[in-house]
Image (cartoon, rainbow, N blue to C red; front, side, top):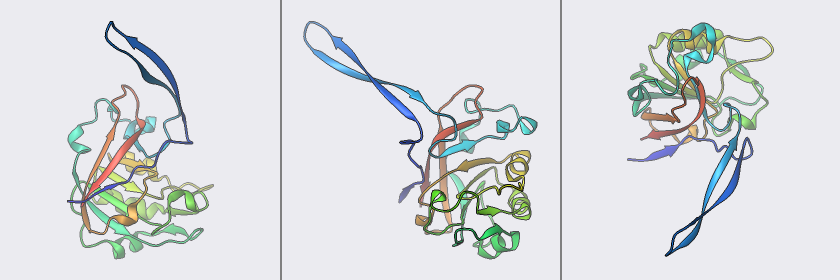
Length: 206
């Protein structure tokens, strides 16, 4: 078994201010370190549940989403090698690159090859609306990719996926290291109540 960490760090995208806590009894004195965190929900690698858009809210959040839908989910991996600024990805392009049928509850798209999501111009490579429709038709409930939307004209990728009950993992890294067509995908966010977008640790098992 090989594990690949797909998680981008939060360092530089938020703050974690340490505070020291003196702890002592008659035998020993030492110092604990606690942290005050300050960041929004789109830092590091993060997951969007369908409730991230109010109109597609299915009533589940980071605290109530079924853990079995996040833990060791069978995932199909699709690799492309899109250049910076190369525009929309079509459904036919995904179908041609897909290693057979999409099997399992998750799909991973590595659109940028060895490039990270933050090594191209923002949203200069994106999933077209027809690619989004193709993904929704696969019947998955968990999706991870290094590209999503376009600007200024939206493809409504997130709306379509959330409406289909798909949770989306954003800003993953190391997708090019997934050298098998099938992996097991795990995404474990903190269990915040009434929160539908939250940073999470994401691991692929080969």
